[in-house]
Amino acid sequence: MKAQKRSVRNKKRLIVPVLLLSLLVLPFTIKSGKQSFAVTTARDAAQLNAGYGAFDEGGTIKESHYVTIGWKGAAQYYCIYQVMADKNEIKLSGGIAPTPDETPAPAATAATTGPAVTTAPVVGGLNSFQVSINNLEAATSYTFKIYESDQAGKKKSEKETGVLVENVRTTPAKPDKPTLIKIYQNLNDSDFSFKSDGYSDGYQVRAETYKGEKLYSANASGDAISASAVRFSLKPCYPGKMVYVKVRGYVVIPGVGKRYGAWSDTVEYGYAKKLKLSGKKDTIKISGINVYGAAKKEVYISLKKNKGYKLAKKIGAKKTSCSITKYGDKYIQSKKKYYVRVYYYYKVGKKLKKSPVYDQDIVFVKPAISYIRVE
Image 1 (cartoon, rainbow, N blue to C red):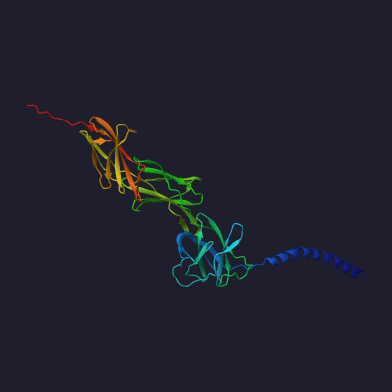
Image 2: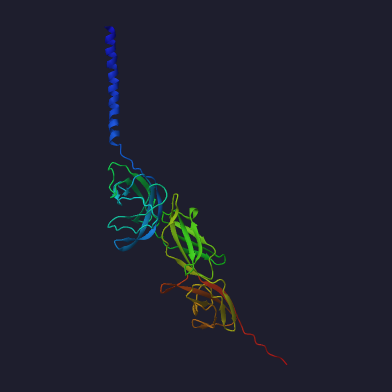
């Protein structure tokens, strides 16, 4: 009898902990059951490209920034959504399927609002997928989500979590054109600066001739970039040519490399390699006025170094020398020292612009020497 009473008391003691434990576990079990979403089979999702191109949208060619995303998966079809800042998701495409052939990517499909999507085949590997998304803003990071879908692009399950592809970057916007700070003709060196956009990982600097022939190309990054400006030096300065300098930003996509934005407008300058001056008998002779790409040149003369310059001669693109006897309304005189400046002009469309750099030198005009024969 006593043994039965002890057994009943022990059972009562066990019931209380079990009830407490079940009360603690049950909510978590229920919650876990509600959140057991299907996970898409897409994997290895990554950004493959970024750029700026022309797309056919409803018969209208439009230029816009685009990105390309790729992934692998076991499903037959996928669809892609853009994740907005407020966490809402906007569907961008119908069903995306792998394509076995190697045909070029088709033009972008028409889009009335929002980004348009173009699928492109990828060969190699089981069920490889690739999608290009255009109508995007420059210098922006996007987030996209990939879901399994049917052929029409409908999600297989609205409870599916999908696969995120974060920090998908477009290429930078067009930078402001550089400013020529100083050019050191004796050192064959020049300094430039332009405004930093705060987005680019670095910048490419390019100098070229008026025909677009490359003279110089280099990247500016690291210490050259501050929060507000980018500074760079161009050496050599390429005397004897009209030089056009421009810059563009780039972003670095992991596993892909640099992707460049649009070029800035150009800043231009030009000066001769070496002027040759001589003065004799009320005449100044100048040679070496040779700058490839200059549409015309103008010679100015003064008796003072920093002021009083008057136009002395206009020279055509092909002519490289001249003789001067008059500047402004004044005549060249013997036994005097003159300062000579030569400015170079280049064409922008149908207009002529003057280089901010000019050649300057000094010449002393010697008197004519007469000899008298003595018998």
